[in-house]
Length: 155
Ligand SMILES: [Zn+2]
Image (cartoon, rainbow, N blue to C red):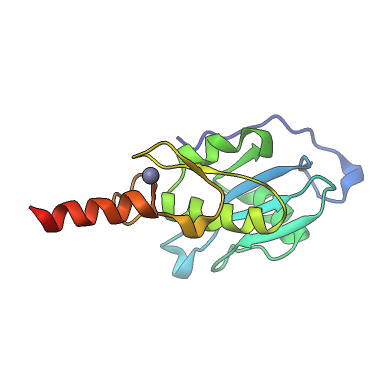
């Protein structure tokens, strides 16, 4: 599922070592690494102007700066670069709780990303309006979630 993309071209001019990161791209990479035995996905954004934003970083390989990220990706065993115009790939492919967190942060940065409720098909861009509590593998809007709870109470 986490296919590695190698569409970027090494360029010495970027100051990013072996890697040229493309603007308006979500960078998903293996962070974490507590005591070498655990990692979790971390996320950073290079926005339309090429500015770096640390979205979620944790543990030993969490990257708070662009330089750290470039170094880490050069050595990393796993990462994926997702162009923002292909963000659906991220929404459909990654853990729902993390998707919700990342999309919330992206929308705070003036993106306008919406997520579809698996029950009613409505799209929501305010991450407070959706939940993953009903089914961890999909999103439900709050009203579908609450309706389903009521249905369960009735039976
Ligand atoms: Zn719904």
